Length: 235
Image (cartoon, rainbow, N blue to C red; front, side):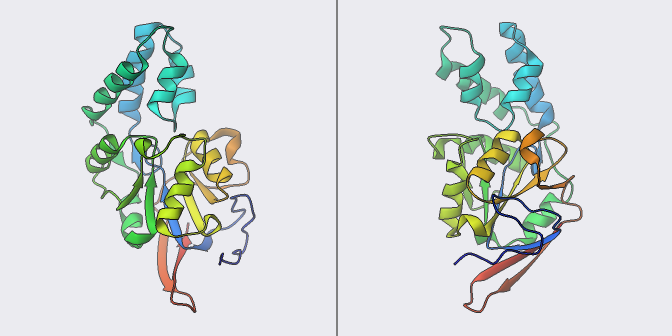
C-alpha cells in the first residue's frame, strides 16, 4: 500500500513547498549528490576532450549523471574502440581520488537512515563507487545499483526502479536525492519523489525541492500500524 501524500506533496515525483515528508525508502545518486568528485571528473574528461579536439564544456554539460560508456560512445571519433576507451577512462577515475569529499552533512544524514531502507543508484561501476565512497569517508550502502547492474543507464528509470524493488518499496513511497538532469529525469520517470541537491539540474528541476547539501537534513524512524518502517525526513 502506498503512503498517503504528505502536506505539499504532488504526483509525478515532485515535492512542492514541502520541508517534511514521509517515505519507506531513500535512494541516492553518488557523484554530485553525496560525493563531490568534481575535480577528478573535470580532469579526466578534460584529458579526453583534449585528446580528440572535442568541446570540453559540452562534454561536461552532457556527461554528468550518465554512464561513462554512453558519453564515450557519443563523443569518440569514428572507428574508436569504445570498450577500450571506456576501460581506460574508468581506470583513470579509479586511480584519482584527490579532492573527493562528502557533501556537508551527508555522513550524518546517511547514518540517521535505516540501512535496510537506503540504496545507492549510480552511473559509476561498482569498483569506482566503492573507491569514491571510501575516499569521501562514507560507508557503502548494502544495497547499490551500479552501472553493471542495469541494461539502460540514466535517464532511463531502470536503476531507480530496481533499487526500489530490492528494498521492497513501491516507487510512490520512495524519495530520490539527485543533482544531474539525467538522474532527475530517471527518478521522475520512475514515479518517485525527487529532491535536487546543489544548484544544477536545469529544467528537469521544475517544481522540485532543492537543498544545497545535507547540513539541515534530518530523519526520524517510526513504524506504521502494521509494523512497517516509516521514515520522516526534514530538510
